[in-house]
Amino acid sequence: MAYFPEVSSKVAYEGPGSRNPLAFKRYDADKVVGGKTMREHLRFAISYWHTFKGTGSDPFGLPTMDRAWDASSDPIQRAKDTMDAAFEFFTKLGVDFWCFHDRDIAPEGATFADSCKNLQILTDYAEQKQKETGVKLLWGTANLFSHPRYQAGAATNPNPDVFAYAASQVKHAMDATFQLGGQGYTFWGGREGYDTLWNTKMQQERAQFAALLHMAVDYKKQIGFTGQFYIEPKPMEPTKHQYDSDTEACLNFLREFDLMDHLKLNLETNHATLAGHSMQHEMRAAREAGILGSVDANTGDELLGWDTDQFPTNVYLTTQIMLELLAMGGFTTGGLNFDAKVRRQSIDTEDLFHAHIGGMDAFARGLEIAQAIIEDGRLQKFVDDRYEGWTHGFGQKVLDGRRTFADCEDHVLRHGEPARKSGRQEALENLINEFTL
Ligand code: XUL
Ligand code: CO
Image (cartoon, rainbow, N blue to C red):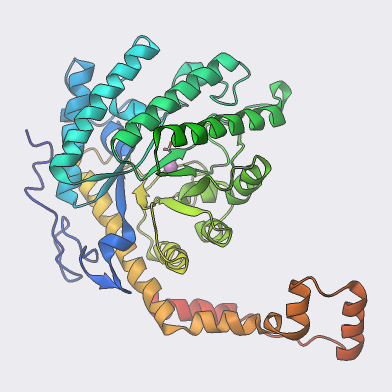
């Protein structure tokens, strides 16, 4: 059965002049940009939870989307139908990767053992589908936030029995990810925070979270899983405060609990903006700390203050993201995972194609622009010239720790009032627009 009849074969690249809404205008998978193909640079992945499990429900309203794959009354059959739809979609769109939570692909059973059995059935099914299609797993994860048992947190729960449950669930989600050849495994702590400090031991909870991550590191070695672990920052929602709130909070956490060697970050645009940062800031902070791993590619709404998880269409944003990725030398295990959902009124399966095609085109364009800005070299030259004083003499000695307050005072007495220079913000914004307009 075809779940996506509106696209008969593979979505084609037709170029910028095309007026076909179901064709790529910019994403030309095999086109080489800066020595690598677009496919190799961008490593697109589809989020199973939004694209195949999203229903259009919101806190005020019921589901709006009737999906043919969600019809069977048998939960296992429904899960298999959903997976058939997913692999049909991946193949028609021409993406190489997917991402999932354990409970997205397999239903929770009456007992923990039943849930594990269900997960195993669907993992085997996914393994077969991956073999047939060549689609690969970017990362897997465990849903430790939907079930009522996690109402007060998973690893950070006041009750150690819940910690044990969460850890066991992670163990099985890691097994599934390993079986599917996952290139990574993500920890997003949706409930790892607090709703009120009146009932919370904050430092105790942070230590609990670290304990779970150390167990995961040990288990990874035990089973021989070599994929990359990621932690995904978010400052709030569903909790009032999430402990791994942004890149810099994660860095502090990873350093404090001796986890720096074991985790990188999976950064999400809408989480960055919820934290009061630009995605460019989060990417820069992670890249320069050497822990930028993967990206959940979406965007928020300028006026809505929650995680709207919209598809990215803003070329200025994708350019900023691609500039940081190119500066890092590109992804290794990571990729661009569309952790994004179509709007509640976008009820047709066709809308899923429009959403992903738009996101892929926006990133392909961002990649080309970023590469052109780098090849042009003027932006980098301006920044390098701005900091030139730190590359030799007094500046270099300060950075090397070979200067004291007394040396600084001596420097001032000899050099007098420092020269001031323009930061040229407007000129640089115009320079970027030479490429984006
Ligand atoms: C929630 C979110 C998650 C993670 C995986 O805001 O981004 O879907 O990406 O658990
Ligand atoms: Co995410």
